[in-house]
Length: 394
Image 1 (tube, rainbow, N blue to C red):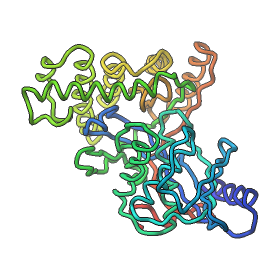
Image 2 (image 1 turned 30 degrees about the vertical axis):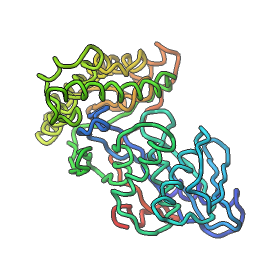
Image 3 (image 1 turned 120 degrees about the vertical axis):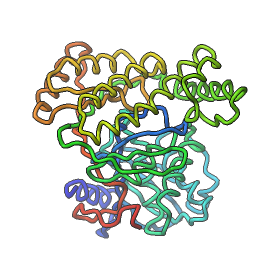
């Protein structure tokens, strides 16, 4: 983290001038191990926070503007700080920052004139939640040490994405970006918003493989899946009014649901069960069962939920043919982005070389690989890269 912190400070001074040291804030991306498309159905998920993170440098500004520069895009956006509650979406990356400012202002926090510089190591469009990392890091930078309950921080960041950006995501991404713990996955109950730590076996390594594609269908199809799940709930509720979401549905309820919505509901019901079974296998050190549940999850996402694509399916099948691999599946919203693979630590280098060669030979694309270590959640960071205060201790 030392190098990233110093790089950010130098970039901030070059952009905004002066020698003052800005405050630094960091919020991680995430990889979801299992429990896909269950969060907005109020079910269970099991993500880990990553070392890949969005970093924000911030310092008070002269004048009246909230100004933000993205080192990733080379673009700047600015808004009147005093009118933050009135901002409107522009349809670009700046909406994630503006949306957070809107929600903070509406929650009663004064938005002060400030200069922000953003630099994220979370790949955009890779299914590792670059947007939630940006939202949480921005919120901490704009708060600048003012107190906020960690759960409210996650909720506020999610509201920014739901209401301002317009993506009807669940709370998983923002939640784990705030509450992530080093060395542990986080089982999140997306209804109660309670969570528990799940320590991962030392006998597995986790590798995310970025397909480097993101099909345009993704955003529209995500909204379609949310609507289809809602249709399934409405059909079930006609005879079982106690079913408030697919979290409450049981396999025998599927006969009440028509065609496409039935398949969507079947995935969610079975995926919630797989989360529970995966955690039990994890605690028992049953690596084979953990891997088999990964594969079952991918098959369900590909056939019942229909959010996979040719590139993701190829990466999963190719991974399963490599020695030392326990299981592989797509992760994230789908239609591109990443797979996540469980592999024996001693076989990780061979896996990385083999999967890269296979994908390159098939599609002519060089994938990017990320070694995933469970990381701490969002925090203020010192100029030497040390975590000063995590969001859950502020």
